[in-house]
Length: 136
Image (cartoon, rainbow, N blue to C red):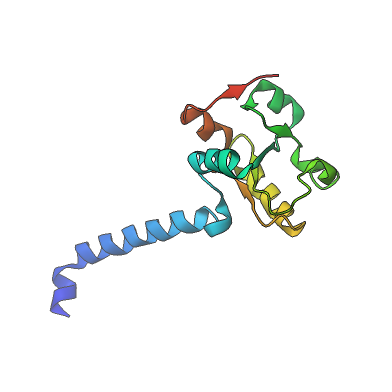
């Protein structure tokens, strides 16, 4: 008990830092929270992954990952015919920040696309990583 009283500040710091680590893990959504931009590039290059931009058409025209197909989130289920026929193909989903892409990944997993994942940080992270972006 004396140890706890003497080191209360250190114990509090340890508890707070542990809580922050747990919070950051859970806020990403665990394993289904997405992939980094580097992992997305690897999946596209080595496993023929398909990049789907779930932004609205105007956002997509303003800038998107090179080669990304545009299927807005609200139209995703109606335009499933435009997705890969092989449901084992990695489907990478991107939006501006990653929030809509995470919802889209959940939707596609319900449709049987087990390897549907969001790109963490979205187009913002893609640009920060210095990866190519095109307009139009």
